[in-house]
Image (cartoon, rainbow, N blue to C red; front, side):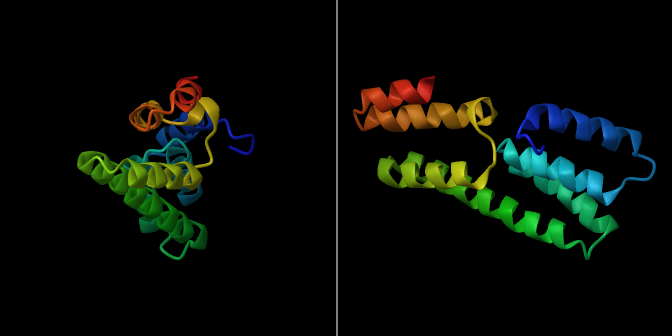
Length: 135
């Protein structure tokens, strides 16, 4: 996680959570939630976090992470809503907010988000930016 390789970190956290299934540790579940968030997956992140907070409801890191997860969920809903309305400017702003909400970079950005970015750039007629987004 510290070197921002969230896919391998997610696998490690999932393995750790499986090993601890009889007696889960909140710290492991919070790390699992953080990896899901960094990979742009708010639903499993929130599920892991809720499990962690059920174990340790006073965990301040977990509460802060919940806010970040809910914020990402809101931005994703805004992207989808703006795309449905074909409000490309708002969709682009919401997409930028999604990217800011995660720590992932490069290959860590969800493929669906990359496709949205390409779509947004093509609709705007910005071929160069669409090409960059595709790479």
